[in-house]
Length: 152
Image (cartoon, rainbow, N blue to C red; front, side, top):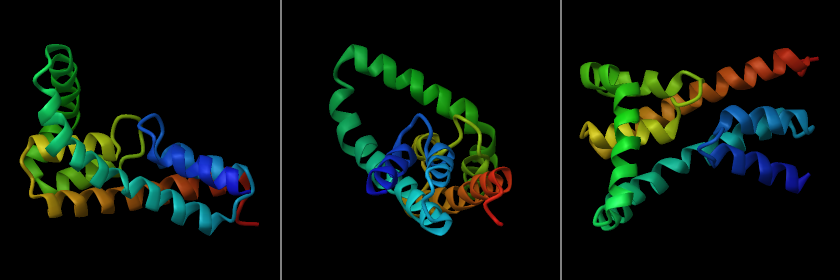
C-alpha cells in the first residue's frame, strides 16, 4: 500500500500526468478515496514552489547556455500560447481557470510558467494555481469514482 501511495504522489508531481494520473492510479489500487484525493492534491500543489524556485534561480543560471536557452524559450512559448489570452486578459481568474481544466498541458507546470511569464505576483499565482488544482483534482476524483463505482 505504501508503494502505491508513493507512486500516486510521484505521478501527481510528474509533468507527464500530475494528479490527473495520480488520483485514478491511487483509486484503482484500492487506496482510500479520501486519502487518494488529499495526498495527490498536496503532491500536485508542491510543484508550484519547486517550479518557482527553478524559474527564479536555476533557470537564470542555465540561460547562459545556448541549447538550454533554446529549449526554455520553446517551453515558454508553448505555455504562453496555451494560457496567454486567458492570463493576459483575466489575470488571476484566467490562470485559475487555465489550471482548472483537467486536460494535458493545462496543469500546475504550465500555470506556474504562465504566471511567471506574465508577471503575476507570486502569492496570487500560487493561490490561482492551488484553487485550479483543487477543482481539477475534484473533477478527476469524481469522474474516477463514478467510472469505477467507488461511491457504492
